[in-house]
Amino acid sequence: MAKLWGGRFSKNTNELVDAFNASINYDKRLYQEDIRGSIAHAKMLVKCGIIPEADGTKIVAGLQDILKDIEAGNFEFSVALEDIHMNVEARLTERIGDAGARLHTARSRNDQVALDMHMYMKRQIVEVAELLLEFEKVILSVAKQHDKTLMPGYTHLQRAQPITFAHHLLAYFNMLQRDFRRLLGVWEDADIMPLGAGAIAGTTFPIDRFFVAEQLNFKNVYANSMDAVSDRDYVLDFLSFASVLMMHMSRLSEELCLWSSTEFGFVELDDAFATGSSMMPQKKNPDISELVRGKTGRVYGELMAMLTTLKGLPLTYNKDLQEDKEGLFDAIDTVKFTLQVYRDMIATMTVNTDRMRWAVSHDFSNATDLADYLVRKGLPFRKAHAVVGQCVAYAIKEHKFLLDMTLDEYKQFCELFEPDLMEALDPEHCVNARVSYGGPSYVENDKQLEKGEAILKEQEETLKALREKI
Image 1: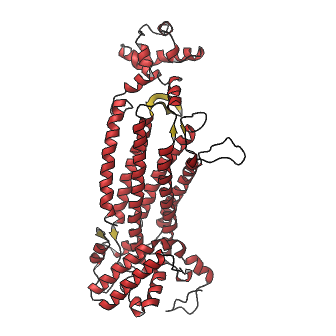
Image 2: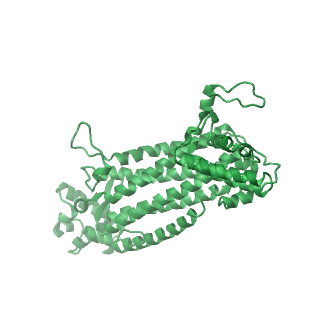
Image 3: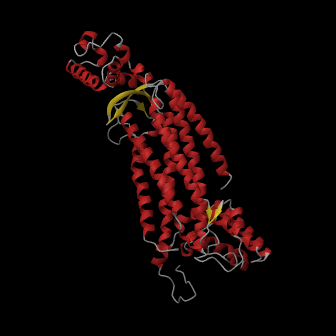
């Protein structure tokens, strides 16, 4: 049913306009925040003597009943009422009469939706942080299990130097740490209370915005009413965080696609996290990794869409700002799905340690260590690099690897080679020789794993404090 606005309007809204204008189909997920915000607002109106205490009591009780109805699935949302705010208020007024009609005193849907979004954002930050922390724990756990599992490290997707699987996973652990810090940064701008800004210029009623902020666990209150209703920086912050996180997850997805292929054979995904082919019965596809890789572009698009929406808007509220929700909600859902499924997928995958060890013993990734060996014998690095290049070319010609060559073959290229060169070429020695801070040696792995545990404890404490503020 099309809306008759009243006031200066003499015609009902066109039904197509009603449908296009309505946001209830997606903003109904804000129902918890909308009701909590309205309860705090009602209490403030009573405290400041703006509405009678009896009306305030009816409003709070009515809103609590509506919350129960929604959560029980007994609330029918109406497109004609446009959004979550009007749906809740209309039902409230229907139930408690004029007292419900007083709830909207000293506020606008402009500052009301801004409040809902800030509160929702804070809740989602905590939920995403919990999932991120769980995934970090899995990464660290699998790294611990493979602190001595050798594998080739790659540059340009070509085998470069021997590393450990733990070292490779710890690179992603470090990325996720930075993601966690970025997410905490989103909290700062979300933790500002906009209610009381009205439509644009506050209100003539003697409200107490700081009382509302205290009721809703906000640290700060917007100092400018125009900024309060038009600010969506915190939405951009989250979409930016989500884009970087998904970029990291997409890189991991790409590696899992490679590692699980027959050509690599480094890991096998659990059957529960792979799919088959409708035509080829032998296939086991890493579809989850491919989906995450694909959904990354969608999250990027949501960040670009929000930036584009905001770039040309004058202050303060414009209907364009209704577009802040669908992209944000989709990004949140995508990030949550990704962290949940990857937590379980990484925890259950099989790491083919023998295949990794074989690979690192059948390549030339120990060539740099051979050059370093000559440097320790006194040869300048550039000359050592040239000598080893000749050794590699010879080995390729002879269908050998560096460990297959004899000392006499090495001495053709440099007299500094001695019997101890074989130790220098052993992949395990190559890894353990790299004891510089942040390197892949077993000793450094242990230090980084211990540091990782300390970081997780710190994040848990931070998360515990945030849970109390939503």
